[in-house]
Amino acid sequence: MMLRYSFDLDKEADAIDNAVKQVLKDGYRTGDIMSAGCEQVGCQKMGDLIVERIK
Image 1 (tube, helix red, strand yellow):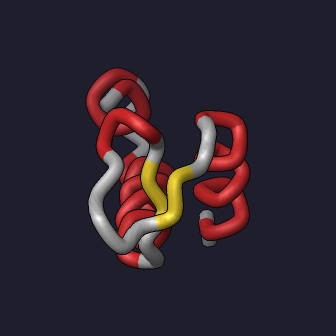
Image 2 (image 1 turned 45 degrees about the vertical axis):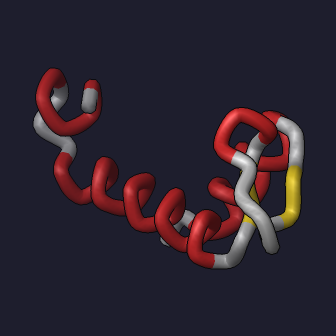
């Protein structure tokens, strides 16, 4: 939200939003949002997975 609404960086905000959506689609979850059939990862790993998918 900060990128989009404070800094007017819509392209960058979209890249992060899309990366998060892809990680969730790929079945990764942290413990607080864990679902059956998904792979639980810690916060550090979740951040790494998101960074890998930013385009």
